[in-house]
Picture 1 (cartoon, one colour):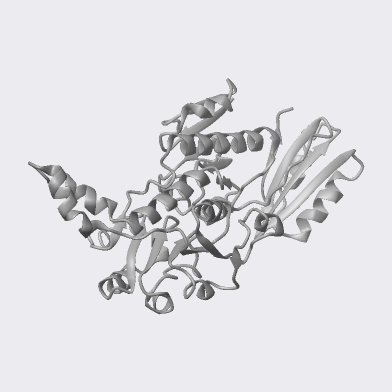
Picture 2 (picture 1 turned 45 degrees about the vertical axis):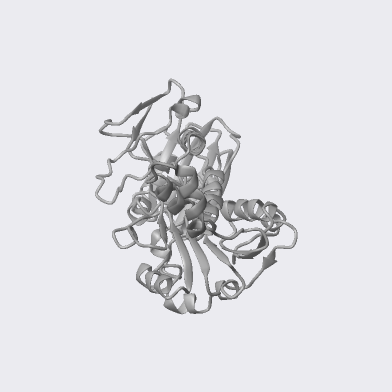
Length: 385
């Protein structure tokens, strides 16, 4: 039986994945794994038997990754599970910024008397432009960015995109005619609309600022459904006041960005659809289950990807500091036994899945004991057959 702690409300769809071998609760004191959405875990006290954390969403800024890694805890996310929901909000944001639908709706709701006559007289104040024929610059062509490109192209837009990690396979998903550029700076003078789909790093923090805005077209619209900190809000407000920026659409409102003419603040609705929440929950639960039962790692932000079919009757996993000593020690300790080892590294972490045709816990000086005593080994776990 595995105990799963939920730190946020999670879709009941997890129970299509987690069977009676799992106890799921919002108040278990010593969980084997945690399912989380937006709960900030920086002050969370990690119990000794915690093995994994799964974020039902893509961003993991609310999880203290270094602390988890130091303790050998695998952290998962669910990239792509909410991509369609975010894509649709980006398209919605473009349409709202092109046509003053929000302002028009607020004005229409104040009307009394001969409403139809007042509408015909006053509607010019809320006119706008069409997005067809305009150029959309997409910074970040991951799962969301590629979906946005396809949808925008279907609406008649021209697409320019930037992503330093774009694979040939991913590039094939982009609409015909997409212009791939070599830097964000190449996007700025081309685009009528710019949408951000990059993670928050030291390199991307406040990438939209006075200097980058100066390189953009007059009247540009910026859409930020990725991370609020990608944009210097003060610089954007100044650019809105000078008419350099037409609209800023942001899914991460702050005190600085609400109540400002020219800023459309959306209350973090990017992944807030029933479908996206279900998809994220199912994906997170499935990754946890495969890790807890089989040791397989898919979509971890701190462990290397490693998937292995069982080959022998006993299986254990090893988490350690990336070191040749660990790799060599595995072979030395397993010498003389029928075994199969899969080993991988990611950053400072090494991870191994080992199948052995022997009783690895037998005796005082068992295989598990020997490995657990090594300096570079963080944890060793025996998995049930």
